[in-house]
Length: 342
Image 1 (tube, rainbow, N blue to C red):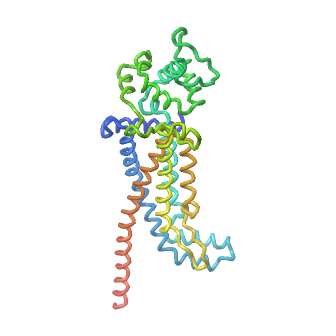
Image 2 (cartoon, rainbow, N blue to C red):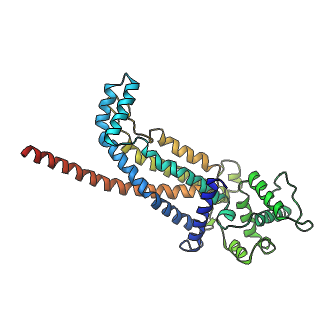
Image 3 (cartoon, rainbow, N blue to C red):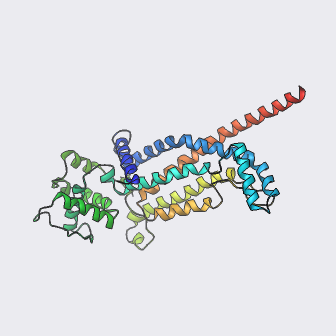
C-alpha cells in the first residue's frame, strides 16, 4: 500500500466515523465536518504562515533597498538577500509548507471519493468484484475490457484470488467503477441481497449509503463539457455548477492573500515573496478546473468548502494580526519616545 493509499484509508475511517456520528448518515454533511477537522489540524501551520507573511511585509522597505543596490549583480543580490533573511529569521519558503501538506491530502481524499466502498465502507475487494460481475451480466455496467475473463457467477466458481485480481483490473481500467456500482445497487438492491461476500451489516450499510446530496447533486458524477450536458441536464449540469463554484472560490481565496504577500518596489517590480507569486493567482484556479474536470464533483465540493473556510479564517487572522501589529508598532513608538526623554 502506497503512502497516498494509506492516508486515504485513514481518511476513509475518519469520514465513516463522522458519517455515523455527527454526519447523521449524510455524505455531504460528513464532508463539511471532515473539512472543518482538516482546517483545525492545519491551523498552527496557517498561523505560522500568516506570521511569516506579516514579517515579510515589515522587511519589504529594507529588502527593496538591497534589490535596488545590487540590481545589476544577480549573484551578489541573492547572497545579500539570503544574508538579510538569516539575520531577520525569515524563511522565504515557509509560505509553501501548507501547500505542500495540502496536496497529498487532496490526492488521498480523491481516493476516498472515487472508491468509497473500499476506503470508507471498508468492503472486501471480492465483494466489489462480484457486484461488478453481476452488474455487467445484467447489462447495467459496460463490459470492462481486462486481461482476465469475466466469468458467470451462476455457472462458474469464483475464487477469492480471481475476484481480487479482477478488482485490481477493473479499478485500473475504470477508476470510477465503485461510484457506478453504488448507483446501480441503489436502483437494484437485489444485487446486495444476493451477494455471498457481504455480511448482513454490510448489506444494510450499502442500502443506506447514498452519494446524492438533497436529491439534486451526485458527488460521484464527473463534470463534463460535452453534448451529454444537453442530453441529461439533470445529471451533468449540477456537477458543472459545483466545479465552477470551486474555481471561483479558489480565485477569490487566492486573491485575498495576494495583496498581503506582494508589494512593488521603486522600479515597479514585485519583491520576492517566497512561494506565493502573482502566477499563483491564476495557477490555482486553472489547476482546480483541470483536476475537477477529471474527477467526481465530490472533490470540487471539498475544494469549495475548504476555500470558504480558508476565506473566513484569513479574514479573522488578518483582523487579529493587524491589531497585534498595530499594538506592537505603538509599543515601539512609545519605547523610542521614552529613550529620547531619558
